[in-house]
Amino acid sequence: MSREVKGYTLPVGPQHPLYVEAENLMVTVDGETITNVEVNIGYIHRGIEELMQRRNYLQNIFLSERICGICSGIHSVTYCQMVENLLGIDIPDRAKFIRTIVLELERLHSHLLFLGIMGYEMGLDTLFMYAWKDREHVMDMLEKISGNRVNYAMPAIGGVRRDIKNPESFIRKLELLSKRSDYYLNLFKKDRVIRARTRGVGVLTHKKAREYGIVGPVARASGIVHDMRKNSPYAAYEFSGLQGRWRVVTEGYGDVQARVLVKIRELKEAVRILKYALLNMPKGQLKVAAPLAVKPAEAVSRTEAPRGELIYYGISNGSDTPERIRIRTPSYTNIMCLKPILEGQQLADLPVIVGSIDPCFSCTDRVTLVEERTGEQKTVDKNYFRRMRE
Amino acid sequence: MSLPEIGKPYKKQKGAVFVEIAESELPDILEKLKQSGVTRIADISGYDNGNEIELMYRLPYQDEAKLLNLKVRISRKNPEIKSIVKIFPSAYLYERETFELLGVKFHGHPHLERLLLAGTSPKNPLKKKEVKNVKGG
Image 1 (cartoon, chains in turn purple, orange):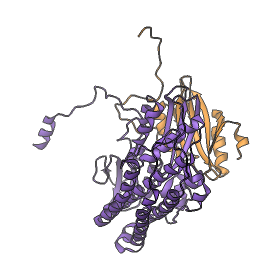
Image 2 (spheres, helix red, strand yellow; image 1 turned 180 degrees about the vertical axis):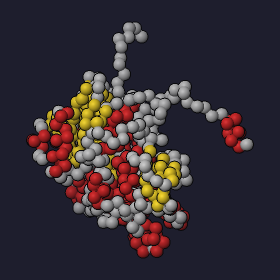
Image 3 (cartoon, rainbow over the protein chains, first blue to last red; image 1 turned 45 degrees about the horizontal axis):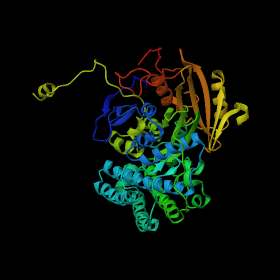
Image 4 (tube, rainbow over the protein chains, first blue to last red; image 1 turned 30 degrees about the horizontal axis):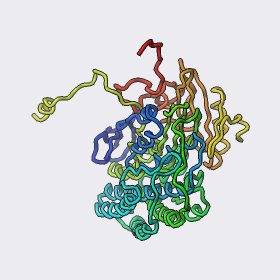
């Protein structure tokens, strides 16, 4: 991080209209051009890794689900897979399919949420409303399956907690979503305003994406064929019948438009996976028995979250509490690419570019310990604010 | 670089292999892995087992199909190791995080400073506290 950059340094965040969550970018500008970016993270850390070492394996399912409000399902599924790997148990096929259905629905809603936010960042509030209206269909389906809109609490160690009844009833809404994604695809390819805002903006080259180890849709938009669901299949993706139904989506240019197009095209792929999974769910039990205590072992679990590769690593010590759990989230890796893609761009494009990597700051800051602050902290009382007003 | 050249795996699971290597071998092995087609490092994590600190370097290989976990044990009293940012630039954040949580010094890291914790947070929170013999309850 060189400090010799000429120009004016502008703090973007931690509290900024651009973000819903708190994060800080120190942007150096020369006129309207961004010359340097410093990414400062850590404003939302909650000490999840440390908290997990104080809770038992069952409690941790629910804690892991609360790491992120958007991709909550994938966190708990990856955690459960990791514990199953520690125990060395295999889960029933029906449970694998139910997990996959919930994960793909989650991908649908996460991508539609992203699409809405992209519209909002570009000043196209109608697009924001459209995308979130369609997202509501997905939320309805998730609510019908799990009873919840955000934290589905579906996976359990050894299987799933609930069955999916009347799977055929979801097909109509999925077909509607497939049609809508055609509309969005057309919009992002042809609309003049959107093209002007997204084409050639915030380019992440293939080389840079490789160098920074970028994962998920951001990497796929730069031409890296890389998807855990294909490369290292888990849950129902292990079944060849399902694997044959979809393919990994990639784009070549690595600009904002490519990143959005990847996600829109992934909507269609997710619908294909869901249709097959809903109509071909194998019969059988939902869950196998799993012991509460886990013998000393270590294991990893890798999955494809809506934002990319998610890794859980755990060490057990024979008790009912894990010894150490490590969580590597995709947004944490992808935050690295903000520097190369922002430098040289116009300041006015910053919201669109930052939005396009779909950063999830809660995921980025998941680790470390939160304890009571020491006495050194300054307290701000209401007189302070009164003085400020005067 | 094929797996036997690195070392004998001490554990295998579906989609992952665990190998333990010596601290001094690490840069060479990573350099060779990079030449043989490993494109990125997925994660570096640390664990304090009470006697030493176990660092785990995770690299996807075989076209991302498998995750190679390289375990390196380093001293707990004076934890230090060579930085690998020059070989894999994506290790930048992981090394900074491990430095912050466990106090491991990565020599040659360009910017080894606080990353996630607040200035008032306790130092190295994932390092185990020294437990003294406490009698009674």
